[in-house]
Picture 1 (cartoon, rainbow, N blue to C red):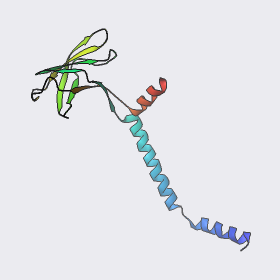
Picture 2: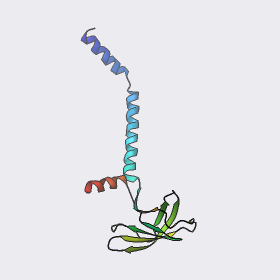
Picture 3: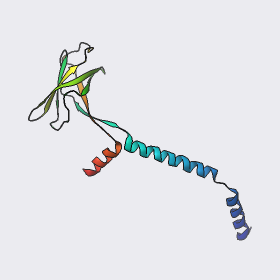
Picture 4: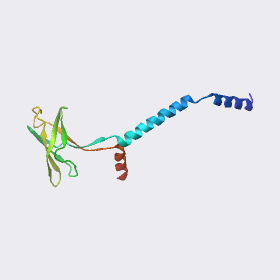
Length: 141
């Protein structure tokens, strides 16, 4: 087969191909990219402050957080016991001390009886930001 015949066959094959598979693949790639871009700018990801230094009482709990915390009274919180049990709480009082911020929580009325010696973690949602803001904040550092 000569080069001219092979070239002619290649041109005929390209003319006969309507590129349906390529067009369909490109369409789905554009849709996927558009959805990912929308998620990147519009999604809302929760930012949490956590503390494992927690004193658990009957209806209240006290926890120490870092001095740079953005917690204020009225915010909802969750306390997770070491056995996996989840207790809903609300920030009642914020006290700024030299080395930490002491937070007092009101526990939900349905809180089961717990041991004072039990290990627990307090978690408070402080903000909701988009993935784009997270990336920009990381690049700014």
